[in-house]
Image 1 (cartoon, one colour):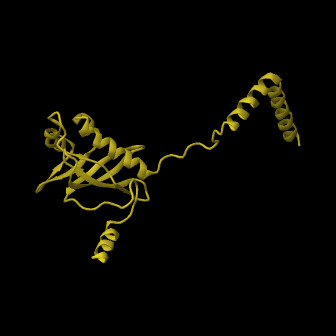
Image 2 (image 1 turned 120 degrees about the vertical axis):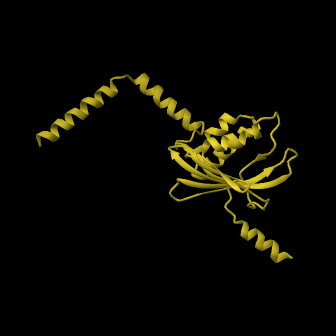
Image 3 (image 1 turned 90 degrees about the vertical axis):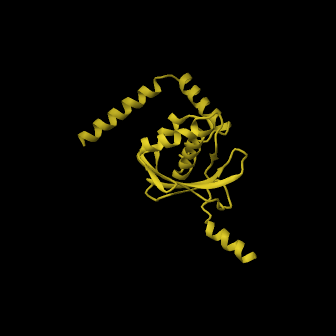
Length: 192
């Protein structure tokens, strides 16, 4: 009982300190809260982007390094142990990829561009696939890329595998759709 009385006395003491700030401050605080509510300010904190949305954004930032002609920025997206498939032999490691890809960053104009149109992330949130069209300088689709991204630190996605392939259809609904390409091809085949 003695412990309970001490807690009650302490709570009363704290509440009296809160009231002691004065009615003008309390009125100002209530007015501020009422103003925010009347203005339609949402009380809920904005939800964090999904892992797929984050990888979409990271892939777009990675692609922007080509448009910006910034090979140093390109390098920041590569895992130390990254593997890029190039022709018949893979490029192994960040340094090998930078060395080989530096030629694409050498001129004033980008020789190609890319953009993601589909991203899938494992339920664990640690590995993701991004894919999308690769375009030539005129905007014509010339290939399709596939990149595997790994979450290497909180908020830090880096490429561990990258490979280009022939042009192929992407998902029907962009962005972020996980519509399977197989369904699109099956629908097309059924119409013919």
